[in-house]
Length: 184
Ligand SMILES: Cc1cc2nc3c(=O)[nH]c(=O)nc-3n(C[C@H](O)[C@H](O)[C@H](O)COP(=O)(O)O)c2cc1C
Image (cartoon, protein in one colour):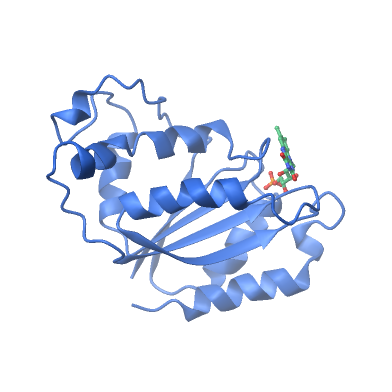
């Protein structure tokens, strides 16, 4: 079983990383972590090249990431909330999935089997707004759908300004248990 995890926090030992690591401790098989702050993925420029070609006109680290997504069984997105959405480097990765979207809705050659992968969303937010993740969920649903993943698990932490994940034993345990439960 292969798990591909995107981490979208600039803090190597921050709230999101701690939560992701507990999830990954539970998971079996091969794990690859992509730190979106350390890769070179340019934003989509809507050049429409992918309307006719099953590839992106921009050549950067995304070229390999498309293959890695395709060859994974589980896709994990781990991100803090930035202004009610995800940080810019992760948004760039999401938008570059336009190649897949065009395959499905424009080129009509989309061959990715639907709902084959397990999709996991891990989010942390400083405030205690319960519904802060709703707009992000909507976007990530699209991301999972277009990568052939089912939105299978969500692990959300609010109020990290007051209770850092390191001190949130219940949530860390929950993340580990969810990781452990994933089998293919
Ligand atoms: C630029 C920026 C924007 C943020 N926007 C929000 C926000 O809209 N809502 C919120 O609850 N927390 C917000 N936060 C707080 C982070 O989501 C929170 O501290 C998170 O747990 C940080 O995760 P990390 O330690 O993994 O980096 C923001 C933080 C930054 C730096």
